[in-house]
Length: 247
Image (cartoon, rainbow, N blue to C red; front, side, top):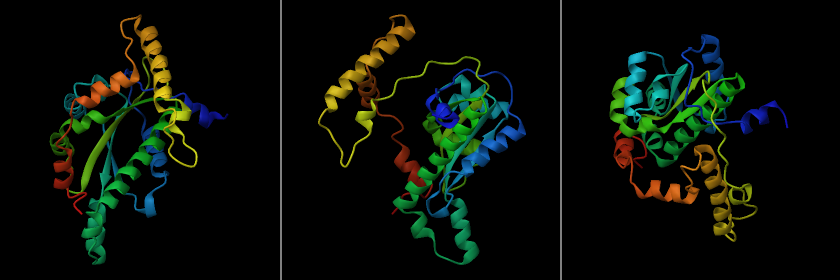
């Protein structure tokens, strides 16, 4: 155990922040930490947009499902898959890069690069004593988000990251058992239902204690109810409209 691992294992999503902006130094450390993440073939297929303007944050909060912590935080980062610069590079160097950057593979590279960068940013922020919350809700209406942030073709806003000084610490949610997530040599389904049933008991107890008995649902119940409802089903058309994943 060391301080890095302690920071990782102490993670919890923060949804209540003090009205205190991050300093320029903090912002730069967080972004530089994001850039230090591994990147496939050195392609660096992502960009990060920092939002501090109150009206823009208010609009993003509305678009994300009226989540107050999108508006009220120290700094709001939007992580984007970005192949716009690579199209530009093709023009600079006189190379036909379009078939490559419109491939499913490069789409996956951009998603993975952005996600790795974001996790580095999150760990850096938490190591500074700040709290974070990922915001997938910005994908509720990417057309409007794109207009608000002046997003060009070949760029997709993937998720937001609210960062700031925690006003209230939340409980740490229990994760799936290690034995259910980590497989050795091959994917193993021998004890699948047994492990999920055991985890359901842990989660039900967690909710019961946290809510004073008002909530006792299980994890599989929560996931099934969520997945039964289709959401953001426009995404394939949006992605293709941004000229990603066309081949």
